Length: 239
Length: 224
Ligand SMILES: Nc1ncnc2c1ncn2[C@@H]1O[C@H](COP(=O)(O)OP(=O)(O)OP(=O)(O)O)[C@@H](O)[C@H]1O
Ligand SMILES: [Mg+2]
Image 1 (cartoon, each protein chain N blue to C red):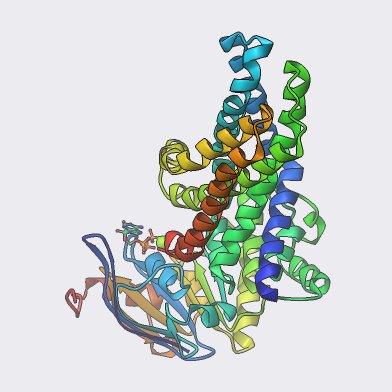
Image 2 (cartoon, protein in one colour; image 1 turned 180 degrees about the vertical axis):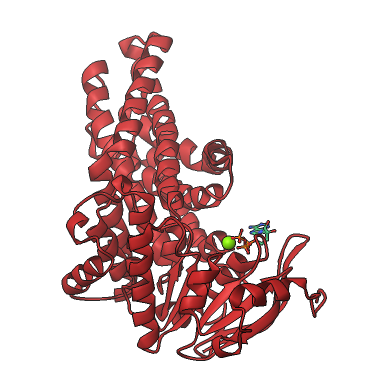
């Protein structure tokens, strides 16, 4: 499903990712953890085809990035830390607009269903710029799901959400995973990540320093695994 | 071809709907354009006789500056909540995104011209309602937005985009503006058509060259 080999990303002289190897099978739910500045967002942007790898190979659904990006984009949903919504359009119009970009027809049913799912049915005709941060985040999640993607990438999706919205998001993510879709989510909320994910990868100083399936976590839980991973020296140097 | 037109249509519809709500861009451009027109006419203390010779210059300076307001605003709207990423994530041709943005910018430019030119005609008793002059405005606006949309999507990445856009844009626009001013004043002073044609041709060539350039480089400009 997702295959990353020896991925290096540089911004000018600064090397942010220094040889990331990352494999995800269909239906896996991977939580990508790591300290601030570790390169999680950079990594997700490369998977999302928004940034180009400097070196290395990235394949999603068998398609190579960036050469076959169009085929990848068709099946990919992204929740970034910005909502990717137009303030001067209503909730409904935003979803409809993105639906059209994905070539969808008969959007009425799909839009209503999504708005209900993220709890915004009553605000459907309100302008997005009048929405609170959390409401924008809810709509951003609806936006990412509009074309029923096979792979969902989420960058700290719980940030800014209240308790109810977090639970709503968790329900949506469990549904998505239950349908066999693949999810990669970055998070600083270890409790939520532990609850949702089937695998945990820790990215630190530009490499994946540890990876464990949910069953293989130490009995003390994710926090202890995470701390352990950060203490271990990085296994790979710069490429 | 169909997905291409569909994407373009979706973007134009989105830009027009958003502008209809806020009317920020059109009203900003209009107020600015009308002020420039008034100030020029006070500053130059134009007598009716000299007016017809400077009108073309005043008009194009006005359009050029009002246009950068619109271009900046239109790209800033894409950058604000990360929408540009939203567009780039979609499985659509990048050049369809460019043509969509260019077309809505063209609509805004022409909307400003449609209001400013009659006002100018009435206030300064210069007849701007001539088909030839409108053809020049259409060709000039098309060239303006084809370069402008491309450079605005470049400038929007920078922190200093408001200043950067005119600095990048105006040098590139010089041939177009010269041709547009010459052709416009040709029509206003009723010069024979043979003398106007070379300027019109220059504008057509300019439009074709820059639309094709944008077609080729837009993808590289917007992607990291
Ligand atoms: N466009 C860019 N140009 C230069 N450096 C960048 C750019 N984007 C990211 N970086 C650098 O890359 C490093 C990793 O950033 P990134 O945003 O990927 O971290 P992160 O793991 O998502 O952190 P956080 O947990 O704070 O979200 C940082 O040192 C950052 O300064
Ligand atoms: Mg981040």
